[in-house]
Image 1 (cartoon, rainbow, N blue to C red):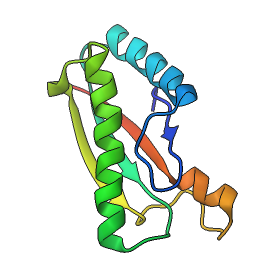
Image 2 (spheres, helix red, strand yellow; image 1 turned 90 degrees about the vertical axis):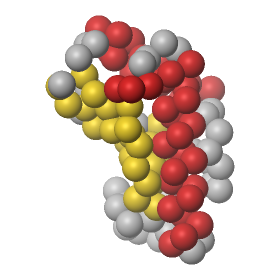
Image 3 (cartoon, rainbow, N blue to C red; image 1 turned 30 degrees about the vertical axis):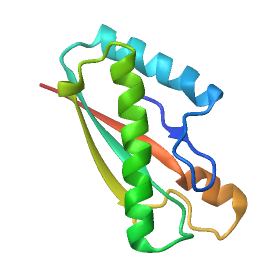
Image 4 (tube, one colour; image 1 turned 135 degrees about the vertical axis):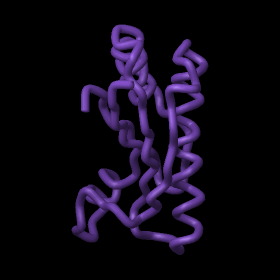
Length: 111
């Protein structure tokens, strides 16, 4: 994808300052590619129940979407889905690995 992932603190869905800069770059790309549609996936680490993590992943995807919309991206272009803990990028049981899994991932396609 042309858009970069953002990551989250444990059990949080707040956008951190460094991740806001990543989202700003994503906004720029979306402005330059007005036909692109975006799917934002919300992901979690394995800690917590499946149900809890599905809800948390949803909040993470919503937070990313809200940021893009507040910076001028048409919300009609953006869909969200939560995978909770079901699609980890990393499967080791370490803090560093869990941190990689707490993310919002952006997929794009042309209309």
